[in-house]
Length: 417
Image 1 (cartoon, rainbow, N blue to C red):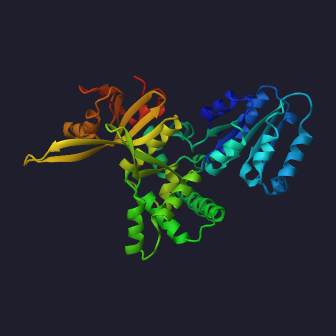
Image 2: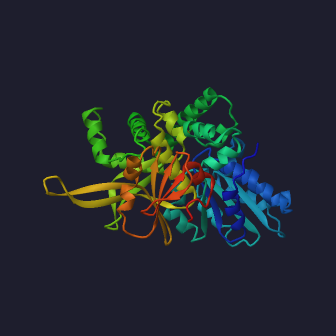
């Protein structure tokens, strides 16, 4: 069954022939190759582009190893580009090619060549590389299947799909597997043999055990704050390992570089400033997170928070963790400062939303507790509480909108009021 990835396909279609190098990035096995070689290539054919004008090269394929040489790749592409007609060059996993920037830049001034490449490492799109593209690199970030995409291939109820999704995640291959054992085995092997091996080899990491321990800590802490300095102290006192805060920061950066996790900074809403440490980290795929900790911790409230974060990022929002500082008095009348947290502060241009994730809202007291931080925000941006409770959308007397998780996930306009 073909799973449509219209969000990303439309981005590719809209960027056709714009004079820029289209760079498709994302975690390994999230569907970049399928998007480029199948969905986009089929679209080109449907637009009557001749097969000879679609040049596809999989650079992970051992049979194409010789094309990882930049000059050999350049020569191969040149040999397949005729003088007449537009040609579409599709290159999968371009980071395997040395000096790939020079190869790609060679076609920036070729009017009848449109270049599309994939890469699994954000270093591939560092500022230095973008500079090498002379400002003509156009990134399209691909995530694992959203819940909406996953549901389209699931065939069960929304609730059954949610249980599967929160357990095994949204890597496309998972959707075609039937048994839990098969899915677990796939995720275990993928993490160990692909992701971890890739990180160790690419970044020349010697402290493998410490890296794995750090991944376990982050996987167990979704929804919680991570402080590299405190982690360094823990490694020293509990693990008897000297791992500096700077090394931990570099490991966390690497996990972000390979798109395994994303960092969400804390933002002082009233003070309008960022608080760099500690920060929260969310996994780009919940199945990988669960596999890493042997499917032991299945706290649905934290998994739902991670799910909401991923959906917001897929929709293009930048997402921070909000902090509200209140100056109050205790029972003795003494002044005290109290911090309230807003799960997500979402920004896109001049738009902003504040969002709280709440698994259950069984009582009025619980609803007030979950919305307290939102009520203490004094600006006029829209505020939401997303819950798994089977409720119809409503707005309370404070202007806070309560919506069901399925309405949020399945309706792309669910935050528009």
